Image (cartoon, rainbow, N blue to C red; front, side, top):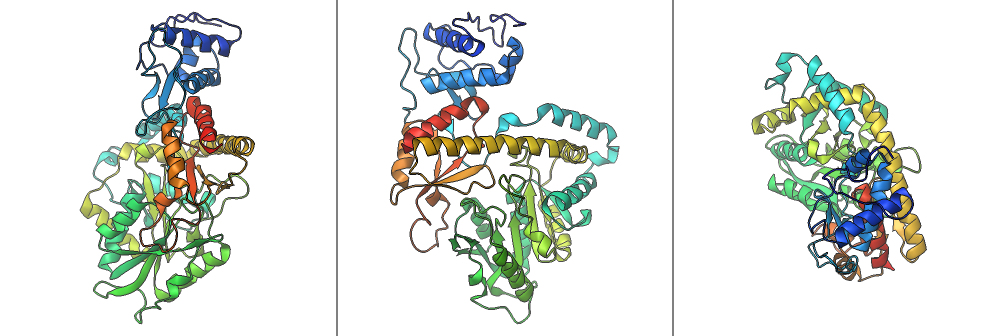
Length: 481
């Protein structure tokens, strides 16, 4: 080993015991906590930093941290790193693992967030340097409300190749995420006379609230084994005048919001016949399809399902973001707009002054054109697939009665539960320090029938950092056994 055990991170002064690198590190950390040399609440170095100091593999450090988290000596929380457990005092036995009151989770399996520890920091810094050195001075001005042309051009090429999107840079608008884009479009639709938007019966309530805040009513569409049921869109018929225009009120759904490639949260893709049917509905009625392609790059068991937008670029608004592929903190998203909407949505963005930082736009453009984005996505696809496979294998061994669905793509899985047990399982998870979500949480309030197609947990296997993953998986199995 090239560096002394006593010369690491925050000067931990560890003395290794036992044989083997992982065993030695684990024992040394445990002794330091038990003796009181590492006080409760002390933040430990990152697994990457400690591995660099010691000259050992990052996975070895992550596994040592994971062992001690599982034993209760350490805690790991998203955003606050790995710390000495608060209840550990000198001379006390190791605390019982996963016995925490609600509100203080040790493990985060909430859906919707990628593994933030895997953000490609060095590659991003290199891309930022190249982009800023090459950028003209006027790039740092107020600029076009649609966003930097470099990024719009790079996205047009990437989306055509990776997602089957048909567009050009003039019809792409950069926004600060899906919710920002949805807010802009909702305002334009309302001004055009739309009053109702059909949405999936299961989804994110803050998306529905943004539509409601713009003065639009949301109408839930049911789900079945083939995805969202789109036939109800035709129930009220089409307006005689076709596409809605400013001042012409229409009470049937003038738009529909879909997660067609990977329904959130149930995980089902929209059946091909329904993809064709919803496009036919939009052509026939003048309606608009809002396609949220939130995790389209991450498909594991077969070729990716292409974007719905490719079937009819004049009737589909395509939304994408860097939130799942890179990190939500970048606040970078994009809308691919039909020509008939592009100018109005750009004007709405200009009026609201919701800007996106130029340096990050230029960096993402460089990241795309240099091939760094593709390399990162390929690496993360393998990373998340391994985690998915480990989740499925662990549940098959420890909780074989639990059926796992929605795993062909994305960063989360749906674990079916016996009827009427969602809340009890959620409570048990909280007492084991595990943050998960129930399927019923995503149900539209106007959806008729039971709380869901079935009781289930929605588990975000992409969320935990490496050092907490195995501890989180163990806690989940304990809850479901």
